Image 1 (cartoon, helix red, strand yellow):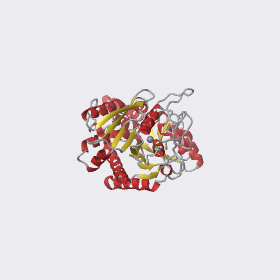
Image 2: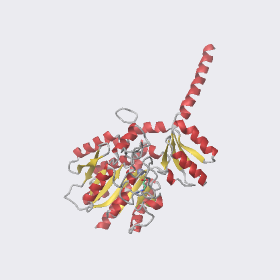
Image 3: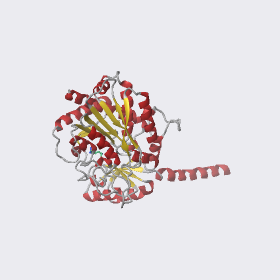
Image 4: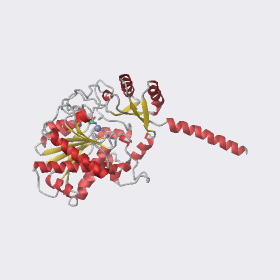
Length: 423
Ligand code: ARG
Ligand code: ZN
């Protein structure tokens, strides 16, 4: 009997302990909707603090009423933040309770953890593993790939391009695709790697990819922001910018998708080094952006088609993002993304919104797609891949396949159409 009492006391104690540990020790992601201007202000204030990380929109300045805001809140601040929200009558729900578990799932690796299923391409890869993989791919396919070093990052990590070509002579057209401008958007590098694997596996098997590789060279930059990407694996999963250190500020990093010379640092970017949409000290101040623009300038006669991969929110965007004005071939690009979105809906039952960047999300100057467009690459796109906020940046590995397949369908659809137009 004594034993039984002791046991039940122990169990009870364990429950209390477990409850404390499990329900409050986790970082959470909240979905919050402001209704009034006062609530918008409060939300902007909360999301500017260090213990939170704004998932959507990219910056507090973009918060508006009646649009759900996705906010990552560190465990130590969950109580304080939710109390504040309640006091001011903001309605919210918990999007993610178990962020640590999701992060663990995303960083699982087959060699260290037998529980991680799937192939290389169905898992997220660390920066080192991505370097290893593209090197290996290059060695295994010397006839179809070329590895090109276009520069290095602030922390001197190499920026490798993989050039894919069909087994044929030289051609005069090319396509560009970059991934991983924003560090925390892990599905983006995963997609570049997926695309490379797909292209090399299904060349001469799938008619679309065969046509693309026979008619164009495809330049792929799997990780444009290696320093930031590495940092999300080692230190802060929610990091967005690069890791450049600025004189006179204790804040680190520039938003590389605000650093291009396209209406640089106007509305939609920030000149404050602490902001997540910091535009940098001057246009192209960042080595990662310099490397990309140098390469694109040198190859702009051949590059006809440009893709930049981001996440999340499921959108197919085209210029401009720096102004509400329409580009001259607006309706042409609109039809292209529309066709791609319809294809995704038909095959994967998933909805993607589409349109010009400024109209579809928000003003965002200094972006790569707008810059490329103004350089004369008239088919220029930014994709926001899965999902729409169910998991956000913490998209579980078992969803990589669908996310990549639908993005692949969209890229192929658009690229094939553009090739027809260029004939
Ligand atoms: N969400 C991304 C960002 O904030 C893309 C926004 C669209 N901007 C653009 N230039 N395409 O950078
Ligand atoms: Zn992004």
